[in-house]
Each structure stands twice: as C-alpha cells, then as structure tokens.
Image (tube, rainbow, N blue to C red; front, side, top):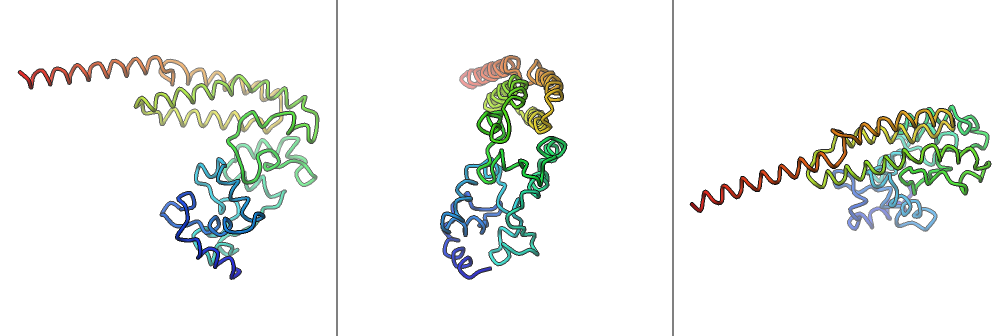
Length: 258
C-alpha cells in the first residue's frame, strides 16, 4: 500500500464517525482513507452513505474485496481484493447476493447483450448510491436511453397494483410492530414476496410478469387477510388485552387500599 494512504488512515482513525465502524467497533479503513481523498476518490463514499447497502451494513469489501479492518491488507489480492469490477463481471458479482435476479437477467434481452454494450445492474441501479428497488426505476428517461418505452410501460403497468399492495402491507406491519405485536414471520414473508416480485421484472417477459403478478397478488391478499397482517383483528385483540390489564391493575389497587 502506498505511504500516503497509510498516513491518511492513521490521521483519521480516532475521529471516525459511527457509520464507519464495523460490528466490533473497528474502523472500516476503506471508508476512512477514501473520505480524506480528493473528490475522485471520496465521492463514492458520499454516495454510498445514502445507499440501501449502507443502511444494511454492506460495506466496500462486499463488492471490492480486500480486508476492511486492516490498513496494510486492505488492497491485498491475498485477502480477496478485486478492485473495480469490469462491466461483464458485474452481474455475477451482484448475483452473489441477488441470485434469483441474476437468473432472470441472464436469460433476458438485457442479459443476452452482456459484453456487447448491453445494460448491467449498475446501468439502472447505480454503483454506489444504490436505492431500495421500486417501480420508479422503470421510467421513460431511463428506459428510452437504449430503446422505446413501450414494453417497459406494459411491464410497469402490470406491476403497479401489486407494488401498491406491498407498500400498504409494509405500513400495516410497522403499525403492528409499534403496538407491540411480534411481526418477525410476517416481515420475512413480505420480504420473500417482494424479492420474488422485483426479481421477475428482470426477465423482461410481459406475459410471465402478468401471470406471476396475479399469483403474487393472491399470496399478498392471504397475507393481508384475517390472521395475516390486517390491523383490525389484531388491533381489536390488543385493545381487549389492554382493557383486561387495566381492570386487573384497578382490582389490585382497590384490594391494596382495602
């Protein structure tokens, strides 16, 4: 590693903000060093901090390899450092985590142009400022860069209703969690359905997307029904529970006064 990188890391080690710390409180040296560099090298850090990756604790080494806790080995090939992935290597890299999506992508019109100027993951999602995937990505500005928006519009229209249901159910789950309901299983189920829903877009197959969207809608309706995440039955149960608890407290207070 170059001497000026080591000095930059050492100068800032003690002033690293919490967002730059690892699980054990160690400094992620990639972030610490790059944050002190000129714009060309520090800009990726600024973009990453507002990304869905940063939100979930996915740091530089997940994509670039290397040792994020050891300044001397941060860019060592022996520690898996791979630098900036090439365009053709990007889908396989992203597919290490997003496996279902990669399968759809490779079999799609996009995937079949890989290595011949076709789009990869970063074309639509960006490389550092990666946002949570929504249907907003499917828009005329993005899609018409390479082709007309007609087919993409059909796909987006087919997915809109189900996307709205996903967001509505997510809001209900958050309400229930604030009310003290254990929602772990519901959240896992919704997470799985959302991943399946967003993954199939990458097939670019309108017929498949419409067909699968109908299946997913049926599952969402089950999830959103009685015994699922509908707020009415569970909220009613909570209200009864609170009423019984208050009645018990009043009884105990009265008994102690007597």
